[in-house]
Image (spheres, rainbow, N blue to C red):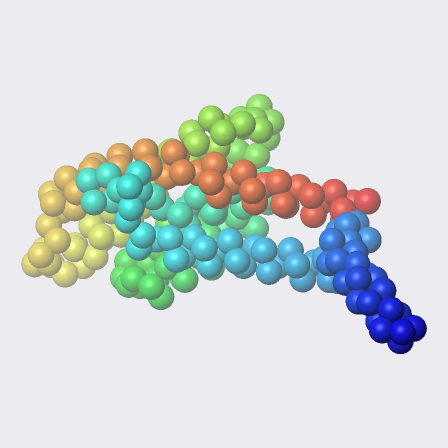
Length: 210
C-alpha cells in the first residue's frame, strides 16, 4: 500500500537528517553555540579533576599520596595563556578544592601562584609541544605548590604561639614526602589531562580565528 511504503522511506530519511545535524562539523556551528560547548567541555574537565582528587587506585597512589589533578589542570590551562588568566583559574580551582577539603590553609593561594608562574613559561624557548616538557613543568609546580602549602601551615603554627599540634619540624618532614610523591605522580598523569584539553582548546582557537 502506498501509505505504508511512504512511511518506511520517511523514517530512514528523518534519521539520516538527524545524524547529519548531530555530526555537523564544528566549523559550521553558530559561534555562540560553539562557545557554549567549549565552556561545557572546560567545566566538565574541571569536574572530572575534582572527582578524581579522592580517587586511589592502582598507579594513583604513592606513600598514601595521589596525583594533584587540579594542579595538572591549572598547568594545562595556564601554559598558553596570560598571567592573569592563569592566576584567576588557579584561584577559582583553589576555592573549589577548599570547598571539598578545608579553607585553612587555602588552596587558592597555592594554585593561583602556580597558574601565574606557569603562564610566565609560555615562551617557546622554555617549553615545547611534548609530554616531557609538560611533565617537567607539572613536577616543578607540584613541588612549589606543596612548599607554599607548607609555608602557610608554618605561619598558622606560629600564629598559635607554637602550641599547635602541627609542629614546624613535623610539617617540613611531612612536606618532603608529600612533595616528592605528589610531583612524581602528577607528572606521570599530566598527559591524561593535558593532551585532550590542549587538542580541544587548539581546535576552538583555530575556529575562532577562522
